[in-house]
Amino acid sequence: MINALRHPKVPRPQQEKKPLPPPPGSALLFLLALSLFAASPLHAATIIATSAGKEGPPADGLASSTLLASLGADLVLLPVALTADNQPVVYSSLSLEDGTDAATVFPERKRSDGSHYLIDLTLDEVRRLRLRPQPGRGIPGLGDGIAPLREHLALLRGLERLLGRASGIVIEPRSPWFHRQEGRELSDIILTTLKEFGYAYPQDKVYLQCYDPEELQKLHRQGLAEGGLKLPLVQMVGTGDDGETMVSSASGALTPYNYDWLYTNVGLRVVASYAMALAVPVEKVHDPSGRAMPLPPGYVEEAHRHGLLVLAMAGDGHGDAPLEALVAGVLGTGGVDGLYSDEFLAVQRTLQKLATSPEGAGPGQAEEEASTLPESGHPPEESSLSGEQQPPAEQAPHAPDAPAAASDLPPFFRNLDLSRPDSSYPAKGTSASD
Image (cartoon, rainbow, N blue to C red; front, side):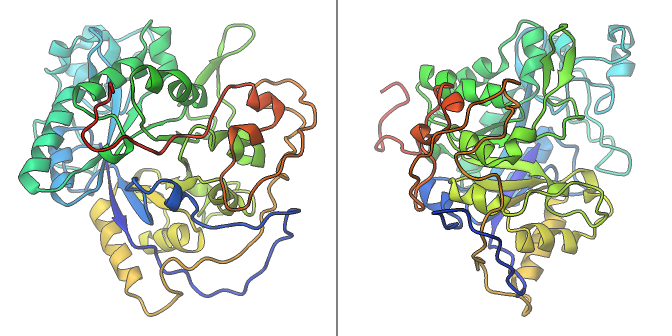
């Protein structure tokens, strides 16, 4: 379970400005997305935490959701997968042996690869399992189990009334490609469940995030419209070797998805046509070891110019990076809009310390830098989406104070029938079916 709390922007230290060569006819405008998505709680710095910290209850359970909502989290992320009887449950993995006692309860239910899969057990069978924390983390013996999405939504509704404040929700369909191989349409089932609870519009503070660009594009073009829903989307960016998204090769074998196109100017323009934010690996923004390939210079600013927020996804325990240096490096000098973390309380305290520090610039200060991403209107010679050679894109006028529109996309991407996400919502009192 991931929860998020908004914080003021971390002060950015004063640095000598080193402007990059500006692209012809454009000037970067920072935080344009904040005005485009005024109904969104993803304003300023957003901390998205997988748990309260090392001593908290196991992630994905109702206890973790209760604790973090009680701590005042603005957003609760619910990773969702399906059981054998098509029940959506909140659990972040396809297999069960690492996070539960499935190997002990159902020793005979493992597949040929040695793993116990959630989708092979019915909801009644899943309820017999107990969540267990990762070694060195969490409260052992708590007895919390995997619960259906409906129970998490009901819990958050109840806490909303009890605490007098609403917790926003981020829903993540886990590995839609895997569920589709099993003959299931995970996202469709999730949308049906959300609609049952009245989550339909941006003011409901509900977001859908996924690693699979094709899944999000399908939701934008078809799924949300057919359900009468207008929910903002977040495009997560994998590393290519994490197995988050797999595609079929010409031989029929599954191969990791290539995310390289998302790091180009054209990629940003395409994502801006269906999503409101990008979530990239934190190593792309802050990597003291220097082992990771950083984001292209000007990438965050260019994303902002296209109306996209940028979030950084940190791994378990944040690696070896000191927490204060990581938070300052990502939300300060890195300039991104939010950070995923599994140390919610520690990060919260660190942000408060940095925000009151006398060093650095004032909150929200922006440095006017130019982008050195591939020039707008000129896609790379080969598209990662199709693998085919693309003709040069047409030059189209682009207003510096407006995000990219569907008509501003190069011809190939324009044929995907994408359109700018609609952040509007109906007047109070109207329903999803109106």
